[in-house]
Length: 393
Image (cartoon, rainbow, N blue to C red; front, side):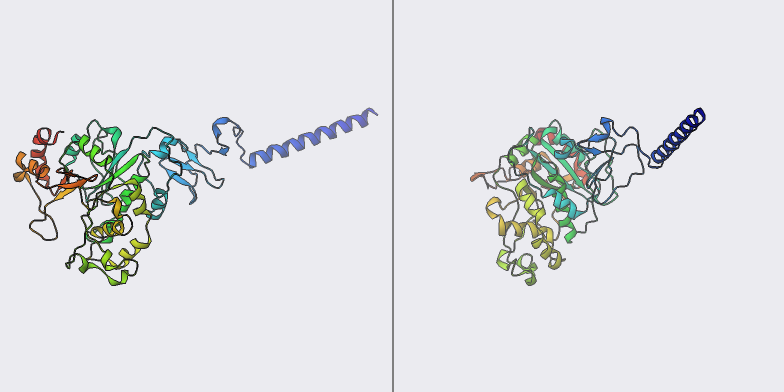
């Protein structure tokens, strides 16, 4: 009997050891992380794979800096940025992203249905710089923006690969957006404008959007510009009917019947618009495709698309004028450029008070222009010397 009991116990012990070995082998081969249950591994019920530099980023994941957000139950990597942080979503701080234009426009076209913001929203003016390279008047603009960080944002579209050489303390630091090649007079110029608008729309605090060139300067201080724009009931897009060959002469009959000749408009490229109109512009594909197909040099889409589109669909919301002064007195394809020898106190005062009047919120006003162009880089030094006395900054 003792021998039989001993044999049974040995058999049971052998089976236990055998089963334990199988279980341990299964655990090792499946790469189960024994820390999977820790709270830091979860965010809203989703498993986070951390410290995995080889984690794949799939097409249905959203990427931002060192952060990829899981969609469709795929792993995500989240190093330095809280992927679900609300402030990062409504006020993007990293402007570099991998979105295509179509993805960007789709994302920027989203409009909240709830009219009350769940955060303290201070309306901001988005200054969108469209430049071929350096910003020669950057020191002047930095003076203009100084001390008003809560009321503006900056976006810079340059040639691909160009990096602004600015101090980390500059208001322009880190404000370049993903850019593409732009050709003068080509639809790519209008593409760049829409790209700037879409990137600026990602920040929900941006309420007004003004397009600026590298040869443009402010001729009033920030407080005046901010109040003028944010209190206006209209956008400022020059839009007029030009019967000459430089206006109606650029119309292509193949744009009809969607765009008729009597609806064709022309205007300055340098616009200022509200958030509502910016969303309408970046959401439009039907009419923009007509310009892409039929408005080629020398049609100049940047002078006709937005003026025509707003005239057809949103004319009552537009003041039909620009807030950027330009001198076309000598004619030609480019405006007059002013250099160091032209900059005097009297010259800038004449730009500010040039004797013209315009409509602002249904009232006549002599304050019609907030910015001016075209200025050569040599104008920077004399402008800095008189900016405090004449422009107020």
